[in-house]
Amino acid sequence: MKTEHNDIEEMISQMAVKLREKLGDDVVKTAVMIGIHTGGVWLAERLQKQLGMTQPLGQLDISFYRDDFSRIGMHPQVKPSKLDAPIDDAHVILVDDILHTGRTIRAAMNEIFDYGRPASITLVVLGERSGRELPIQADVVGEHIELGSHEHVKLTGPDPLQLEVVETL
Amino acid sequence: MKQQNLQLDEQGRLRHLLTIEGLKRQQIIDILDTAESFISVGDQQVRKVPLLRGKTVVNLFFEASTRTLTTFELAAKRLSADVLKVNVSTSSAVKGESLLDMLRNLEAMQCDMFVVRHNDSGAAHLIAQHVAPHISVLNAGDGRHAHPTQALLDMFTIRRHKKEFAPLTVAIVGDIMHSRVARSQIHALTTLGISELRVIAPKTLIPAQVESLGVHVFHDLKAGIKDADVIIMLRLQKERMLGALLPSEQEYFRTFGLTEEKLKLAKPDAIVMHPGPINRGVEMDSEVVDGPQSVILEQVSNGIAVRMAVMSMVLGRPPAEESGG
Image 1 (cartoon, chains in turn orange, brown):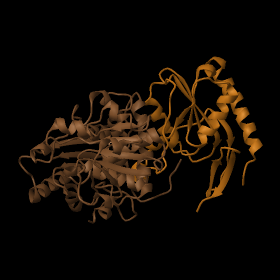
Image 2 (cartoon, chains in turn orange, cyan):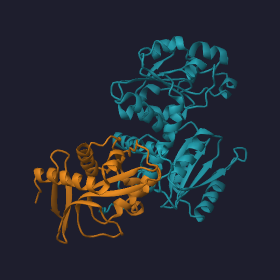
Image 3 (cartoon, chains in turn blue, red):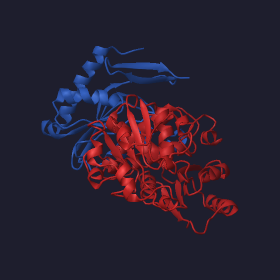
Image 4 (cartoon, chains in turn purple, orange):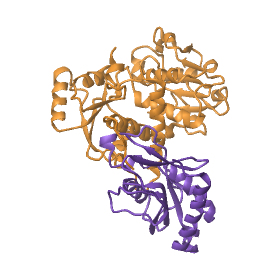
């Protein structure tokens, strides 16, 4: 099952509107947008363009902050994190594709704090599913996704962006 | 030697790093790619990531070192590991059984990694053969044999400046005979596949049959560095003078020392490297050391990221499992 490309672009536009409503023009103008590799970066690029934000886009690969390093080990294709905008006292908009257990967001927030002390962090996700293991929720959500117990959802892209539900074993 | 096999686990992943020899091209590329990600940790306000929290790294240095020891220590600390430095004097010549006894003691203290420098070739190998299964050994230089992390940080530095290895002409200048750095660099460069690898040295400082490693030998610096993309200068170990291998430092500098004038023979965008410590006015002129083509200090900073990559890779290889988001 795949969500059509046009639907996702439409969802992103609505997310941008919601985000502006929530934070206000002044905050959006100066905020630092950070995408989590890889899907979150694709979304953050689009959102940033739609909101006309000027700060350089941040990119996080949270591999070094995972809580399962001792069980899963080093991710073989870790990408560099890139946070060029100052984080101290900045309003941060953190973007990920799917919010599931919440562990990725926990790791991302830890990494952000190693770059400075933000004024606030707002979490934006394209899809939200059940299965939270930490007390973390998103501030702006594109879509709530109902999944069966053997289903998994992922974002493919960058062009076109598609949400894909796959069966897991 | 079985070292190549010893350093890999059953799944072919790097468990120890003892030598470049036997590593596959992709393994070297993976290390360089991972190191690229660790560079940004140096830009963080808190220059640390929590990867190796709770792990203990022991630096076992039987031979003097500043750069290598410090960058290994910094690398471990930036990964949040605890670091123990055991300074073993060379004069007491800790060898054979007493060395292994010492290892047993360190193992009893629940350490996870030994970083070993020793003036005997094969020391790290010997230790790797005898450590408990959960312990990794990194070779930080053994005798004349190998210095794999130095070679990796040199490859990393070259790639940051030159992007592709395939078209490069690389010249290694100096005491090839006694240099573990050169040996590891030669293995790394030939594995990565460059256009031409040259070694330049007086006849007395070139090992026999070095051509079998796939290098071109030059005894004339000017001819050897002509149109080179990368020039790697090696340290001239002063003790070699005593062995009557060289007449004098001055004469060495006249024939094999790199000056701005001679550097013009290389490509205009050639980079100049040196593993340190530098003897200014012996291997190269101060003007070249501090000049725009020198990347010597970059090598030092890159050494931290490369060592972080190797440390996290050897300690981060549990059985593969599905990850959760």
